[in-house]
Amino acid sequence: MLEQPSLPEFDSDDVVESAVVSRLARNWAQRATVKKPEPELDDLFDTSKQDFPDALIPFGEHDTFTGATPEQKDRLRAWGWIAFNKNVMDVEQHVVHPGFAILAQDVFETGMGDTLAIAVTQAMVDEQYHTLMHLNASAATRRGRGWALSERSLPFSSTVRRQRAAQATSDDPWSSAISSLAFMTVAEISITSYLDLIEDDDVIQPINRATVKLHNRDEYCHASIADDMAAIVFDRLGANDRQKFLDGLVDGMDAFSSSDFSTWRRILELEGIRGAEEMLADVEQDKSRRALVQDYSGLRSLCRKLDVEDSIDIDWS
Image 1 (tube, helix red, strand yellow):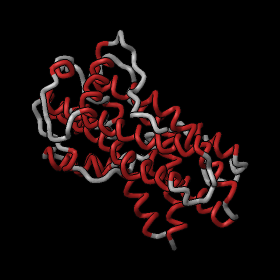
Image 2: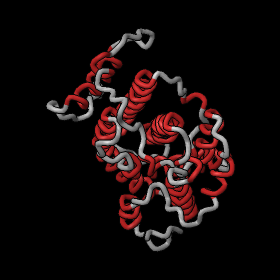
Image 3: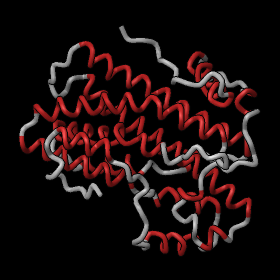
Image 4: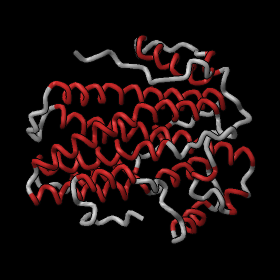
């Protein structure tokens, strides 16, 4: 039978990890309309720490950013963390969950048995916990800083927008399902690389570091499920549908690895940063910039297993 949502594995001796998980457990048990202060978590908020690494801000080294006031930079760092969480939540809710739902409904007629069916459904349940975890982290930032910083002010993440564009061009529900599976596969196998961007650096807010660390532990298991299911479905597809799946992987990897300038443009607009458009133009035109997510070793391993590593249109280096 399907288990109750399992809390992420955590270090009981780590005060911050324990507080994050305790908050998560209470959220799940309470009605959504009940809102109570959580001093155990809030007391751990350290206003002297950065909410987000400058290295992950695409214009973090630009003169306009480095020349901003300390409060402006702090607000942009806080926005960076809010946007990071929103990206995770958007991907979980609009890319991963629908992709797993297609597998749970056995749209591809794989005939999976109880073990795989339960694993896929359990992963869907876990993803709701992950969404809640990142929502809690954003809420803690808003309370800790005393700033509104609503993620509702930001657009959907670039991965969601790209996936929806791909869905809109699909010829039929079957092609749409293949596209959904491809984007889900990219997200679940590569999300650990995205989460790893928040390094366990003491300059970063401890709540933020603990949130990422806890989420990451779960995702290694989910990556294995996504890998296995992608291989099972791929084995049953015809040549044309296999190519659609591989094209979807390429599209998904490109979307997942790119800095989301639409989100940052909106943040800079909300903050009224002078010279923002010129700064973004400089950064977007900088050809020396590296991709945000660079570790696709998990997807490369999958493509090697599918015997398509050399035929997929990706520069693995």
